[in-house]
Figure 1: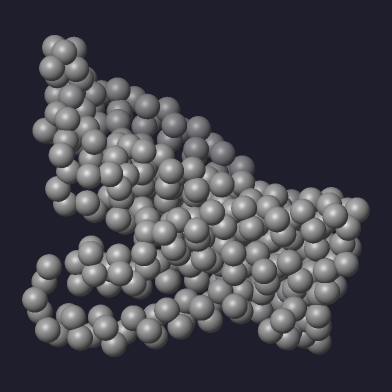
Figure 2: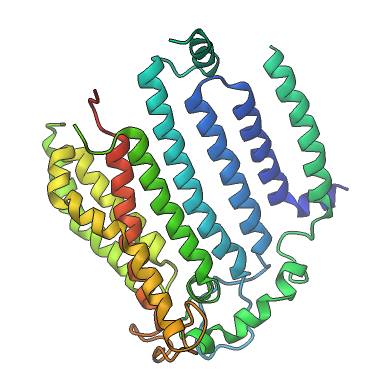
Length: 122
Length: 92
Length: 142
């Protein structure tokens, strides 16, 4: 059991990071802290994918001309995560823009307070 | 307080599912993982011949899966557009 | 903005080297780790550094709004490169099979469409980074 858990070390760390981000997003009322939680979740997914692609003794996937018997790590997760990072940056920037607008209109970053103000119609 | 209870319940639920899934994964760094043995050998052995690029990641994102990257560039473009629309752009 | 002479001088001295490194990462994207996205992010960061140190107006002079609008549309050039594949009778974004010269693997000018797309994507990411920073950092809005 312990041995099995140790061999999955990276996956366990990334799951923990995912849970931390999820908990931050649910329990914090400050919109900026929610965005930070979203970014922690993003990072945990990147870590998960990149560890999935690792191979013991593998080299970075840059072809060495003429070399035989070189073990390369899995290049596909790296390519997918490159895409995911760009999407995460876009989502974060858009969330920040919306937060700036909300702060200008309501003068607070508290999600509950913003909902209250909306219902009062001010 | 209620929010914390909901958070903890969800945390336990998701954590249980994740722990179960993680234990089923092949060990980190195993060369026999299905993710490494199905399509990857073809990328590793043919990509220089197919695309002329030494960087296999570049040959995947810009040749084999270039359509995906086009969508990604569109996402960046749309995000910039949406943010300019939300923040009021350059008028003033 | 800031009047600190150390910050201003070091930012002015560093910026050309940062941008040169970004261009290196873009142009060698098919040979070494890196590529359009990474190099574009480096160049965008250098422009953000200028804007942070010298103020938003001064940064705007280095890369004007019109220029960054043009660079922003480079998604279009990406699609145009993809159309070469269709024009040659193959699929969208086809590279070697569509007759684009691939060159000797390992040379700087190799990789066919990969080389061109890296440059296009690098310009796009750099200008997007700058645009996002400017859109989010306007100081006074009505």
